[in-house]
Length: 293
Ligand code: NAP
Image (cartoon, rainbow, N blue to C red; front, top):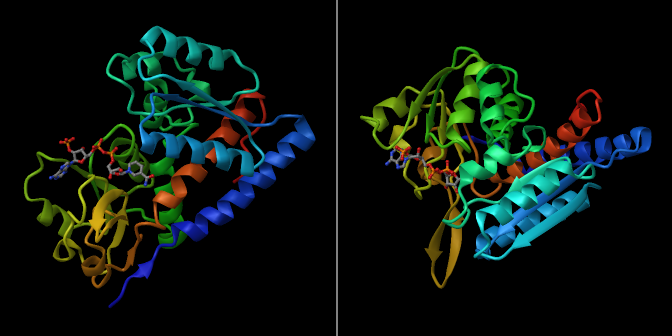
């Protein structure tokens, strides 16, 4: 048996086109141009690439894009001042503060300052609480992308056993809530879980967000299961490096029913879902119904 490939890249391309069309419609019919602001503190090379890609994608989809770059030694007060200014800026509907932040800037202080209506990464306590209450308006981008792929490739997942490995605020916790809301029976695993292979072998849907290359073995996979690999791990490949996931893809693909490749699976969805959240935030801030994308 060979698994069906869950093609995040192809799905993301369609979603991009729908977002661009809805952004153009908002501008034409209501004079609203969705605006995304990125805030980068310091010059971590990976963060610089992420932020640049976010601004470029926003521009490519017809969104207004603003980027604020502060030096690595910026004080917490300086970072909070930038966030407050963007909170007040009517041309900005989504604010993304690139993590990790330097040690002197507390992540919690930034999230407590960020306007939840513009929190397109859905990391503020308000948006985490709304998700828990089943009233989320903005959902964390990568879990939102995973749910779109599951809907597209699996349809109704009610009653399925889902295992999420990883419990971060950014991915694992919101992913588990979304799976629960879709009526899956959800187990959350983490570094203190006992007998992970046994938990995995029960899962109809296995979601791995650990950050360890090829951690999930092929013989952990239930035959026919859907395997969602969120991991992005840089590993040596001869003289260069390549990106691999948290799942041993070759082995898992022989047993699973469907699987996301890395790259080209979940990772392809995240940035496009960020644009979708910016569009949703812009419509909500203008008092308009949510665009259908
Ligand atoms: P994180 O904050 O480092 O969380 C990792 C989670 O994995 C933690 O909950 C940790 O458990 C758990 N874990 C670590 N070792 C484990 C083990 N041996 N057995 C079971 N669980 C273990 O990472 P994250 O931000 O969620 O990201 C996870 C991965 O997804 C990374 O590779 C990241 O690059 C990737 N990612 C990709 C995207 C995308 O766009 N595709 C977006 C976000 C993240 P404890 O809580 O017990 O420590």
